[in-house]
Image 1 (cartoon, rainbow, N blue to C red):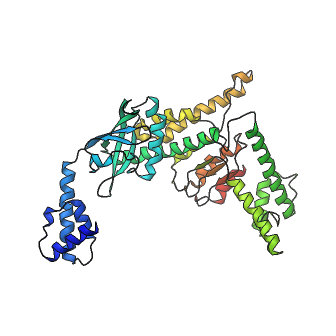
Image 2 (cartoon, rainbow, N blue to C red):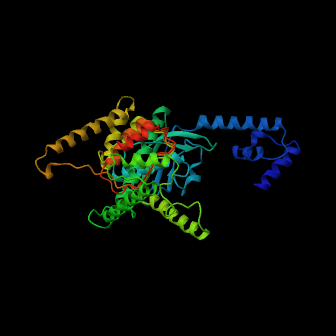
Length: 407
């Protein structure tokens, strides 16, 4: 590259260079050289734009990728993105996908395409050779067994980007929910062993947290034995400037260096404990009303993870892709089931809600507001002994919204 740049520089100095003879890659290299005048830079940019416009006119609106199950590209037709097919061989099909669309693509590939449901589409952005992003819709058109098991994927330019944005958002959020629930059920930290260590561990954690709250009340000099709302009393007392936890948990203001270090270690141990376990991280995704309801349905167990696909199919095929209406329908069905449970003659006739045993739920920076907080507060009363941490920082929640946690 250095020699090529030097060669171009020599040609330019000798006045022998013809921009029309250079490729787009060579022009990219040339415009980065030092010593160019503003006029020369403008000439190079103009020639680059001509080449880009010409390539866009010649590029297809669709392409096909043959992909092994691990994502390796085994074959490609002429690409919408402008990359030469030969240069993509044996690279990953996920390399040029936008990071916000990766999880959704992985989820569709794993839970649909690899389970003989090829018609399920995924919307994604791929990087073009110019460095821009282009929306594509992808689905499987065929399966292969040779040279290795894999799929042939058809990807085409999206005509309506608004639809692509909506579907991609819903797919991403659903994928995060799916990943978190599967981790809580089958992961190493929170298992699905309903008769063994995981339940005992959750019960031990609940007892430990209860003891921490009682310790906080003792440090504040509060008797919670006859309190109708102990959490509110603790919050009000802490607002007066007192420490809930005392020197045994947080670093004390005084004492020896050794004592402060010991107390600091205890504090860090508690923080690490509260962060551990299966987690759902939706932070920094501004959630809409329908998406908040979708999260609530899953966290309360009203919507089991195997029903997530049908719900999304219903939402995406409804007028204006109305996720609110689709979630309301599932919510109403679960309400009818709960009412039927109250009239059941025997336990065998009851269908109990099974919330996923998630330990950490991060909803920070989701801007859910008071409505979202009131809606989501239902999952705090679901039968989930594993839940240790809920983060709703920077969500535009007023005191009224926070008090919904205590209702």
